[in-house]
Image 1 (cartoon, one colour):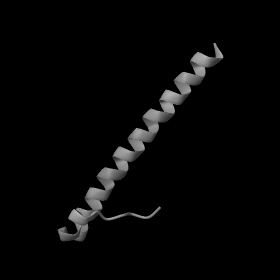
Image 2 (tube, one colour):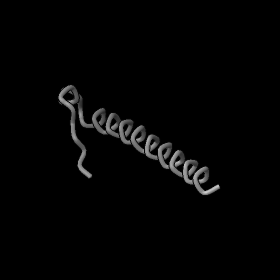
Image 3 (cartoon, one colour):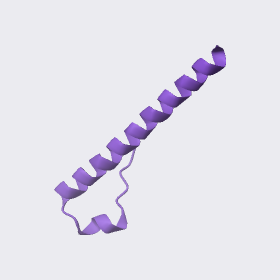
Image 4 (cartoon, helix red, strand yellow):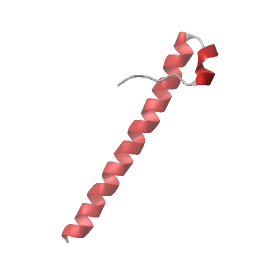
Length: 48
């Protein structure tokens, strides 16, 4: 996985960039987790 820096991030120092990318990654992982939970619920409904 590569970390893609957004245009507005170029003015930030390295520590701030890392913090920002960490926040983006956490949001991405949370979204993935919610989608997985939703698929699992859908499978439960279908298999009943």
